[in-house]
Image (cartoon, rainbow, N blue to C red):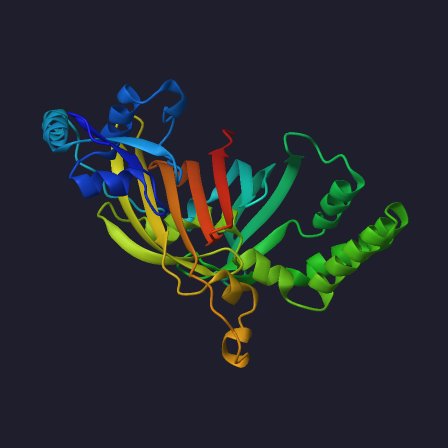
Length: 356
C-alpha cells in the first residue's frame, strides 16, 4: 500500500533501520525511526533502533527522502569531525551489570527467560607474559528473582567453582583458553561432597555428574567459554572497533559457530562527553541448516541425509565508548537466528558499566 509520502513496509529477516535507510538512499537511519514514529499508531512506536521481522515500518517515499537528506546536510554543518580512537586491553578493569533476554519461538509456543548478574573483568599480564582476563560473576537473578528453586540453587552453587576464571587472550583480544583450569578443578572437588549432601534426587545427581564430567573428563567448559556470547560481545571492540571508518568483518556466534557478516561504523561523536557511538549490523552467512548444526557428521556419512533450508538471522548492536577511559560503558546487542520456519531464537544483551 502506497500513499502520497510514505510506503508501508513489512520487515524481513536481516533488516535493520541502518540497512533499510541505505536501501532507500536516506543518509541517517535515525531519521527513518523518527519518520516512522510520526506516522505509525502508538502501539507500533519504535522506542529504540531495534526492529522485528514481520512488523510494519512506515518508510518515506523518494520525495520525502530528498527532503530529509537536505535537513541532515544542514545539521552536519556545525558537527565536530570524528576522532580517531584505540581501545586497549590494559584499560579493561571494569564491572558491568549484564542482562540476557533469551526468547525461543516455535510453532506452538514462545518461551522467554531473563538472566541478570554482575560481571567483573580485570585484564592483567602474568609473570610468563600471558594476556589474562580475570572473570568473576555474582549477584545472579533469574526472571528478576534470586535463584529460588532447588534446581536453580544447585546450578548457582555448581557455577561458583568456575570463578574467578582466568581467560587466555591472544594479542587481538580473542579468547583462546582457560589459564587456571587446575584451580577450578580443585575448587570443584573441594565442594563436590557438600553439594551431594545438600542436593539429592535423580536430577541433582545427574546434574552434578554432568558438571563433574565437564570439568574433569573433557574440555567442555573451555569450549563453552570460548563461544560465550556476553564475553565475546564485550571484547569485540578491542578486536575490531579501533577505526572510525566503515569496516566489514566476519564473526562466529554461539556454540554452533554460526557465521555472521558484520558491517560496523562510528555513528556519532559526542565531544562534550568524550564519547563515541559505534553501530554494528550483520546478517547470517552460513550454508548450514539447523539439521547440519545438530548432526554435522550426518552431512557426509549418511547417504540418505536430506538437507533443510539454510539458517537465517541478523545482528544489531551498539556500543557507547568512553574515549578517556578507553572502554565501552553501554552495550546493547540483539542476535536473532531463524533455525527453521518454525523455530527461532533471539538473544538480547544489555551490558551497562557500574560506576565505581
